[in-house]
Structures are given as C-alpha cells and as structure tokens.
Length: 243
Length: 70
Image (cartoon, rainbow over all chains, first blue to last red; front, side):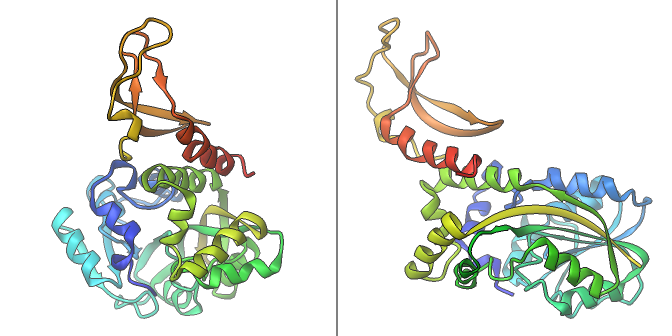
C-alpha cells in the first residue's frame, strides 16, 4: 500500500485548505451520513482503517462518543495527525495484519483507501476476523462506473492510487467471498466530480491533477487519454454486514 | 483558494455598466451547486466580476466538462 504522506495531494491537505481537510470526495459529511445509516449504539467499538490525520477518528471519538481506534500504515501521517488532532487512539499497522482481537469490533470504516490497499483479500479477511457477527463494514471509494474500452484498464495500472480500482460487480463479489452482505450501495459520483473540480481550481488543470496520480509523464498521458475516452470513474458508499 | 488570476493584479479595467474601476476580490465561482473560490477583478458597486477568457476557456470549461460527463 503506497504511503500517502509522499503524495503531493496529501501535502495540499497539510496546508489546511478548507476544501481538503479530509482530502477525499464527500469529506466528513459523507462519513456522518454513513455512520448515521449504521445506527450503531453508543460506546460501540469502531476501527477506522487508513485513518490519515484522523478527521473521521476525531469525529467518531469526540462527537459520537464511540470507542474508536485508527490504524494507518504511514508513520508520517500518524505523526502529523498526533500534532493536529491529539488525544486519539492510533496504531501504525497494515490493514492486512491488524493488531486487534478477533470478534471485537462493531464496525470497520475505510474511506477512500479500499482500492489503494488493492481491495485485497488480506484486508477483507482481517475485517471479517475482527468484526462481531452482524458487525458493519463501511467503505467509500472510487470505482469503475463505465468501462467503454477494456484497454483503458491499463491506464489505471500506472497510477499511484487508482491501480486497485474495480467495478461495482467485482467489489460486491469480493465482499460476498468474505462473508459480507451488502445492505447499502449508494452512488456518489457527483462528490468525486466536485472534488476533482476543486482540485482543478487549486492546481490549474485536470491534467495537473492527473499528473499527481501517476508515476511518470508517460503514465500521465495514458491516464488522461484513458479517463477521457475509455473509462468513467465513479464514487460509492457501501455498508456491508458480516453474516 | 487558488492563485490570483494575473489580470487580477493590475486594475486598468473599469466596469462597463457604471464606469467604476475594478478591484481584486475573492469570488466564489459556482457551477451545478459547487463553489470554487478564485480571485478576480470585480466592480464593487455593481458586484459584477470580470471573467478573463483564459479562465473561462481553461479551468471553467474543464470543470463544466467534468461535471457534465462530457
């Protein structure tokens, strides 16, 4: 899983720009919506996976009064989070090896990082292990909304954080495989578009935004063509229940 | 907020409606319910901003295409 601390887009967040406080489509508003949909009792245990600087973790702990713990792979991000949002419980860990007891969590939250983690079997296996039966898994992330030309998939493989992006059908299959039942799937592509539009105004053009998502100039060109002609990306919020 | 537009730094422009000189101000450009802050030359009397062609045909056009899936 790439270290978001090395990403230029993350550095923008560090500038405390209001629109990038949570550095993802929908921001904290979408988090609130997801948590409300789950209807968790107070003092529920929640694990915020890839918690970044801890905006959601702060909300879950201080506003919602949940027993919330955040994990992130990046020491740099955790260190920054400790500085800007102190007093929260954070662990440096990989989502494929979570240092938390089995059957101990009422909810797992993963925002804008499922594809980044490879949407991997390892992560879902861990989420299933730590959740209680009936526990909720909340995921919001980018997905392939429309695949116009399958050759366009190549444009994603050269990116830093979009290489694991898949279709809704594949996300659902992955969840079913690990014993989850999707109880809510919401389409939030407009939030992705709004986020990208904010970045266009911030950085100057869509091409410049894409440049920060790819490793090289050549991969950026492929990405620009692919997202312009072969693939349409979308954004979703899902809530799944451990069966 | 984005960088001030180059035209926003010098104010040789006057308002076509009232003749007042334009001044730099932060404007919230909105489209389909989303707002994006940008510094533009504005008539303080009429509240009308000057939208330079490169902004209209650059960022604004890109955002329009993005939002409308074009």
